[in-house]
Figure 1 (cartoon, one colour):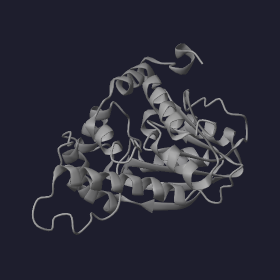
Figure 2: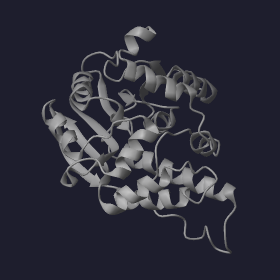
Figure 3: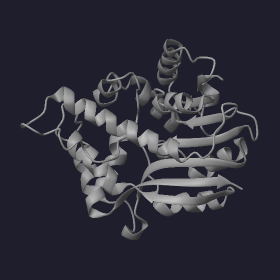
Figure 4: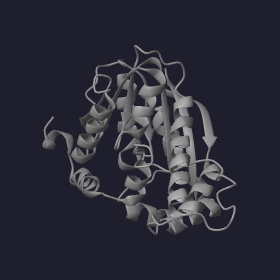
Amino acid sequence: MTTDTVLRTPYQRSIAQYWDEERDPVNIRLGEVDGLFHHHYGIGAVDPTLFDGGQPSDERIIAELHRLESAQSTFLLDNLGAVAPTDRLLDAGSGRGGTSFMANQRFGCQVDGVSISQQQVDFANAQAAERGVSDKVRFHFRNMLDNGLPNGSVRAAWNNESTMYVDLFELFAEHARSLAFGGRYVTITGCWNDLTGGRSKAVIQIDERYTCNVHSRGEYFRAMAANNLAPIEVIDLTALTIPYWELRAKSSVATGVEEPFLTAYKEGSFHYLMIVADRI
């Protein structure tokens, strides 16, 4: 696909430019721990021994942050249902490929990742070659709203913190098209609380930091209902992600966005959810 067919709007071109130029240590340094490069946050309790003996080294904090972000991917994969080695999976908004590689390692199946960042696609494909899995894990310069995969060819698909860049009705229509009947869809995402009546100041700061448009909680369910995706489980991960943010705020890779995230989570204006749905 050409750049003009993938990047259809000025907004999409600005997002692609942002991620093409992104070299954030919070993504790079954590990935260098074991070669799995993620573009999402973490869940779970911080290792209680981390602060034994006082302030830990920055190296130990980085390793712990990476453990928590990989735990988030593991939890997502735990909810994909039964996946066979002959199946095909879709990572929509695949970043530098971390979750895709974890999926292939677990299930042995084909994984297709799509991103509008050519830099991310090139990086992830180089990682696939280095890992010797280029025949199974492929990354494509494509728009998640037009993933290029055949109708009904995907056993399971996910968005791991990437839905805030697109219209949910368009996105879920495309997922419904490419998923097989009975296929599984999982998203982990931050969303603002409909009960607050709009985005809080902290959520607006998050949007501004990442040039994104965080959706409300209710918007996810309205868009799923309109596109033959039936939620079977909704898990509130908010309490589980706060330890990651508190630890990150104390690290050398803190970016300043930690305070808005922690404020939004603790005041209840923002939720960190996993939504699991079946294609019906």
